[in-house]
Image 1 (cartoon, rainbow, N blue to C red):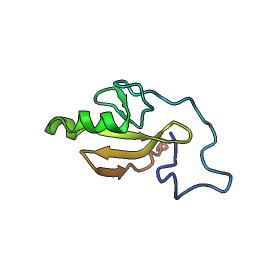
Image 2: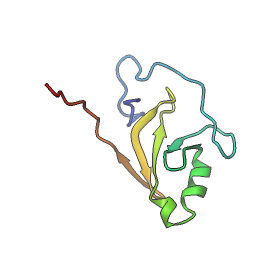
Image 3: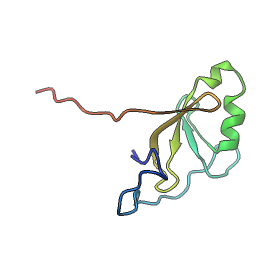
Image 4: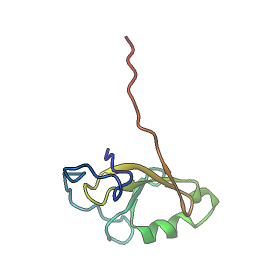
Length: 97
């Protein structure tokens, strides 16, 4: 998972994300996807995301993961509802020893 949740502000000295993957297409219109909705199992561009997730109150509750514009991986930044953005904490594996 990409750690570039504040892509423009928090670049490492070596340029941040290195691996550039092919863009993922929106499942509805074919444009470059910007988010992934796990509930819908769909990659969506910004325009289709707004269209789909403003349809009703249930769709507005879907958590959508933002795709890094550089490396095309899922970031920790998520969208909820129409305009609310949240950053998920890093997951840490606990030692069971």
